[in-house]
Length: 240
Image (cartoon, rainbow, N blue to C red; front, side, top):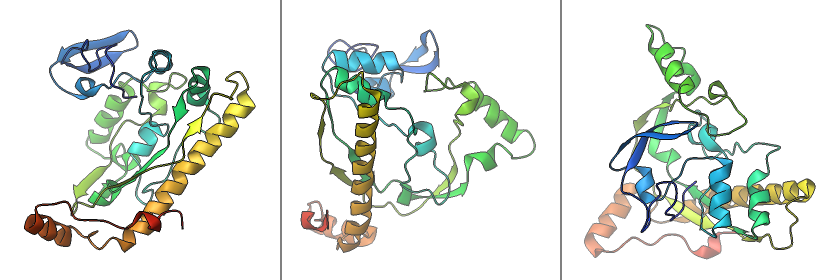
């Protein structure tokens, strides 16, 4: 989760400028300056998300978690949301929050995956064992999973030519009329949010092919000569 908040060590007028380098289930330990907390990140827990919504703050949530971030070869922009976990929708509905799906592409095209996490933990000479042990010693982000259920090992990648990043904000979902105690209704809304985010990804993947400055060299040349950001495709290219 991320939010411009002042509780739990987050950024803001009341938040300290420091980071957490180690955590356990009782809280953060080993603080040093810098890192995500400075920008408003808080530890991923149901309690923290509830507290963000309860205090009417904006939060950025990644339902796909570690599995989605550390995706495998051939899984660019695939979604790995839990099939039966609509908890964030229920909490949002509890406080009448508005859910806005944000679709983004570009990062997965800026690197080439050489080895998947599963391949890395199978490496010989003790390398794989050390990576697996490190993953199992990292507290799972999901409260209902053990540390070993989430493979907290990034794939081995080589950088490629930086791809242009594209973002689109999807249709907002208002929860004022959603009963947070109705699991079926919340699950239905959860599916709608996921579908809207998926639609945004698919639209961007197609629309960027019409961007005259999608390629790095052309974009860089135009921006250096003009001193301005190179234009992109027309918004009309979306939702076709």
